[in-house]
Image (cartoon, rainbow, N blue to C red):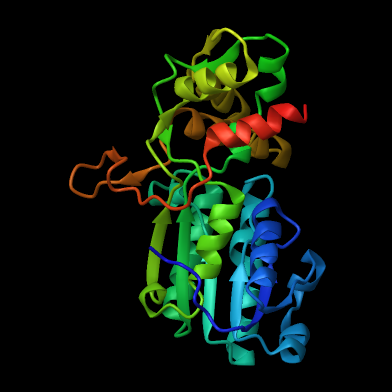
Length: 295
């Protein structure tokens, strides 16, 4: 298990305005690191800031907001590429990249953009660590208000199509910070989940209903709706960026409705809860209790 024992370092953190990035910033400050956290506009030309900050460690938590092909290329590949170029020029020794576990089965534009940058990073010569977390608590929280209002929890199919080991912002931030000064983290791709067991969409709904004090009620939606939407929108993709983006959004929705966020077993090609590492102590139930108290 990776725990923080690092010396205070000069760290440049990209993406500190995001949910995970903000948690990483707090953890870096707790551990006594000197942190430079540029805004997104600086990422177009980060070299001057790097020259001034002289970071020893670079952490990138940036990610495309929409997942559209243009946004993914601009952020997941090009902006990270600019960070890497500036890091090399400034003499940084370690580049920690927050990626995603879903890139192990790439079917979407943002996954391909992430993988392309991962390959560039691995070939750059800098010490690197690529972290691929499973689902975040935030991504499993979108139905809290409807459940609290007594509405049914929405599931795809029977609710057992996918499973994940969600990890909290705080636990993931501690894991990321813990990679600093860890020789065993260098040159590694590290999948990571929160404390198990793996949970299905239906089990998420049951847990959320229990915490809300509501009976477990479900409404099933077929993932095929996204397939149909993609086919229709793709007809106009060659003529309009709007149609192309909407078709990609339909593909993204279908992916998350049908693919688990767990490690793929290379021997079987199936998702494996047993092969998905666990870290931290914060549970989804605790998160739901805090969330419902505030909605």
